[in-house]
Amino acid sequence: MEKTLLIIKPDGIQKRLIGEILRRVEAAGLAIKAMRMLQLDRRTAGRFYAVHKEKPFYHSLVEYMTSGPVVVAALEGINAVSRFRALIGATDPDKAEEGTIRRLFADSIERNVVHGSDSTENGCIETSFFFGTADLEMVESTE
Ligand code: CDP
Ligand code: MG
Image (cartoon, rainbow, N blue to C red):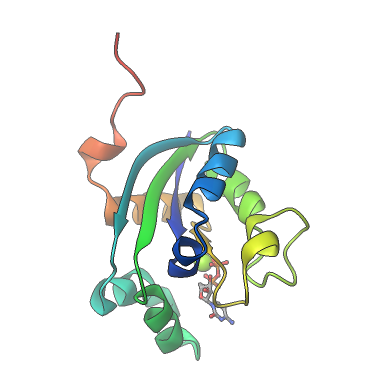
């Protein structure tokens, strides 16, 4: 079992794609373990994307990610990281495979609707960035 972080980015919310994206997650057999809507501030968005701090697109990325509310969700499943990356497609929607979320709905390499963790390790780090152990360990159902 792996965990991976989904973020529905501000353009995804503006385009009213929350239901569409979650439907695709569930249809792919990934479990939603925890979920919340929130407004990122510049400091939090900057910390989340710290790995990109030196990139030319960093400041624009932080602006974009703080431009409106986002939905964050911890997804779980066997090979959840690679399965969810396959569902969202390449960073640049023009290079993303047909039928992927970014290919279908993204406007540009920046405004690409969704985030998905890129490795098993980052899946753990990023789900823990937004959710506590109590949220992530929650059992599926009780009698
Ligand atoms: O999100 P993903 O892992 O596919 O791509 P990334 O290389 O980790 O970049 C993080 C985010 O920065 C992307 O999802 C885009 O929103 C943005 N980005 C950008 O604005 N311009 C680029 N050339 C590359 C990424
Ligand atoms: Mg990435």
